[in-house]
Image 1 (cartoon, rainbow, N blue to C red):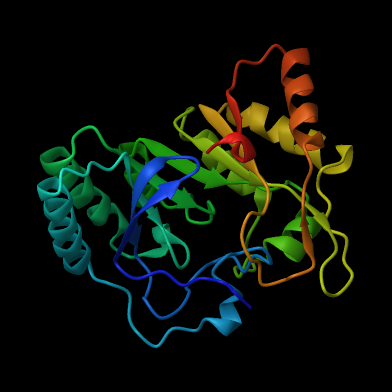
Image 2 (cartoon, rainbow, N blue to C red; image 1 turned 120 degrees about the vertical axis):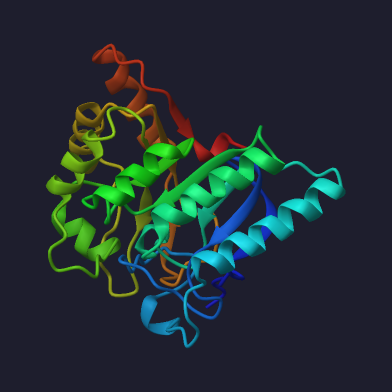
Length: 265
């Protein structure tokens, strides 16, 4: 299993296909994964194989480490395009997420005012008002919806919360009033247990597109696997889902920008 665990609380900068020169902010422990999903395609591996012994970084830990790194980059004349909350799990699960976002905005404004702030989230804590308030403060509020099919979600995204309800998630995303970027993974192939995970056909794409239209995001990012996955039988999706998406949006005369990550260098 060649999956990856990231340093904490700061990693990079790395070159992101989507976002440019990205300085990573990891609010999870450095030795494992803490996530409310257990995706079979996660580059960090399965939750059960990445149980951490260390604690999450505190708000103070994050602020001190981020300021140190931004000072260092400034002195080297390296300017990040984006500060990205990602890493070993779900960033919005941190109990001080809102306060950490406030600190990050202040440090960004001081050291790299042209940089964007991005959050990559699986959307599971969008029911919390403080999380929504924090996400409204960032430039790129990137929230996941791979599908709206409950059975597929349980087989692929595998939420750890028994109360997970995709319809409630969609309602929560509407509360951002367009200040949201939908991120969706498309796959082909079967799992090691022989379960078909192809979500590129009409059965999955059309209801997903209807949900996207109801949310009215500022952008949609569609992508397929590009790194090692813990379930090693998964296959990359071809471009058919992109074509279906574009035809649907043209038919409905919608102007939501769609970006296929395969085409992003």
